[in-house]
Length: 104
Image 1 (tube, rainbow, N blue to C red):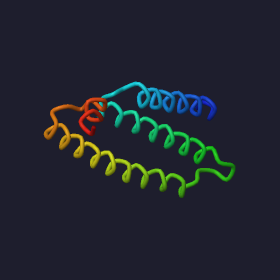
Image 2: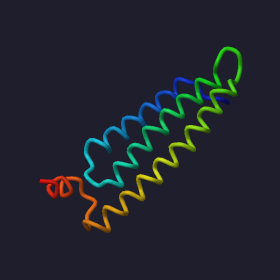
Image 3: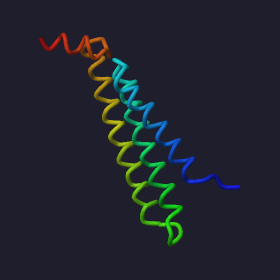
Image 4: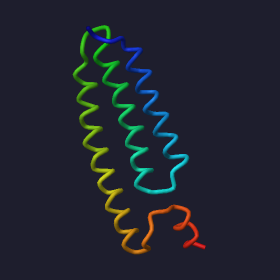
């Protein structure tokens, strides 16, 4: 028994909202990276759901785009984590407010 695409779209919207909430409320850089990754994964879920439920059948091009986007997203998050590690080693904190105060 397959679920309706609407259920998946609602679930993806919920994941996206959790990502936005994480970006808006958390001060830790790692938590903000996790929020960005949640938002990206919600977009991927929507893309896959609508590609699978397209009128002409499963759209392989859309699924290929999602796979390529996941690979690019993994590379971007990896670079982000490397930068966060460098910032932590240099300044000893991952708190964005403390890092902003250092700039002044």
